[in-house]
Image 1: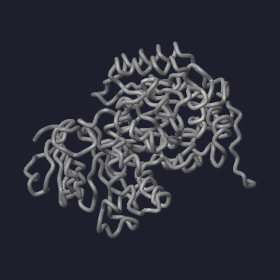
Image 2: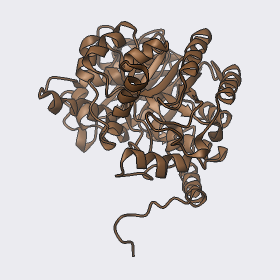
Image 3: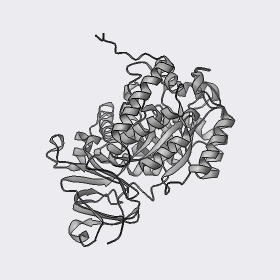
Image 4: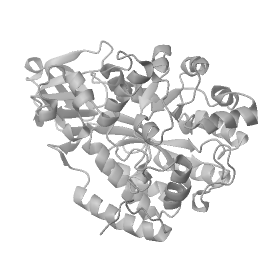
Length: 464
C-alpha cells in the first residue's frame, strides 16, 4: 500500500476533462500529490490506499479557483456596507487598510483562507498586497494553510484613482522603487515555493495610481520573470473617461499601448468594456475575473459576460473582498454569476450552470497559468479536489447534481478539501488552521484597528 495515497469512491464525479464526462459511482485514486486514475468505483477498488473516503451522495470535483481576492479585507468584512463607491474607499476601506499592521495582515489572511478552505476554494489570486500587510508573513500563512496562491505585491507611483488625483489615504501610498524592489525580493524568496503552491505576481493599482512608464516597466518585468500581473480595469465608468481624456482611446486601446494585454494579465471586473473591445481580449487571451457580487453590491454595473463567453474571452470568477462581497464563498458566487445575466439579456439560456462551473475551475486555472496542473480531475494532474455533500434539505432531491450545486448550493455544503494531495479539511473540520483561534484573533484585531483608524461602523438603527 503506497504511503500518502487516497481513494475517493462512490461519488458523483465531475471530471471537467475535455469531454466534460461525469462518472456516476465514480472514484479517484491519488498518490502523493497527483491523480493517478479516475473511473468507476468498481474498477478502482483494487487500489490499496492509505486513506479511503466514501463519497456516497456527494459530488467530487476539481477545487474552486478564485481569481480576485483581497486577503487583507476579510478582517474588515461588513465595515463599508450600503455606501457609494467613493465614500466606500475614502471613508472606510482605505482608512482601515491604511492603518493595518503586519499582524493585521497575517490575521486577515488566515481568516480569509479558513473561509476559502471551508467553502471549497483551493487556489486564489490575491490582487494587491501592500507593504504594510506584510507579504512575508502572508506567504508563511499560505504555506501553513496548505492552499495554492498567486500573491500580488501592490505596484503604484501615484495617489490618484481614475480622474481624481491625490485622493488616496496617506497610509496606502507607496512609491515605485520600493514596490518594485520588494516584489523582486519576494519573487526570489517565494515564487515556486511550498511545492510550487506559491506564485509571486505584480499587482498594479487602478488607473490613476500608476503612471504610463510604470505600466510598461511592470509588463516587461512580468514577462521576463515568466509570472503574471493583475489589476482592476473597467470596474467604474471613470476608467473609461480617464483613458479617453488622457490617452484618446478606449480601455483595450490603453491596455494594448502599455503592453498589458495577454495571457499573463488578469483584469478584475471588466464591466465597462464595449462590445467592440471584446475581440482584442479574446485574440490576446487576456483574462477577465468576473466578480458579480461585488459588482452588484457597489452598483458598478453588469459585465458583458455572455458576449465575452461567446467571443472566447477567458472568463474566471472572483469573490473580491470582505467589504464588497462579505463572503469568500465561490459556490455562492457561481449562483449569482449564473443568475444576474439572464434578466439583463432577457434570455434564460445565457451563462449556464455548466458555464460558471468552468469559470470557477478550468478557466481559473487558465488565468493562473496552471491549467496543465489543476482545474480538472485527470490522471497526471495535481490532486486539488473537493467533495460536496448532497445529503442536505436544500440540495434534495439531487436529480441533476450539476444544477443543484449552482442554483441550490453554498460552500457550507463542502465536506472535504484537498490540495496537492493533502487533506486540508475532512468532514467539515479544518486540519491546517484552528478555526476558533482564527476567529478570536480576528475579533481582537478588528476592535483595535477600528480604534486606531477612528472609523465608526455603528448600525444605522439605534442600539440600546
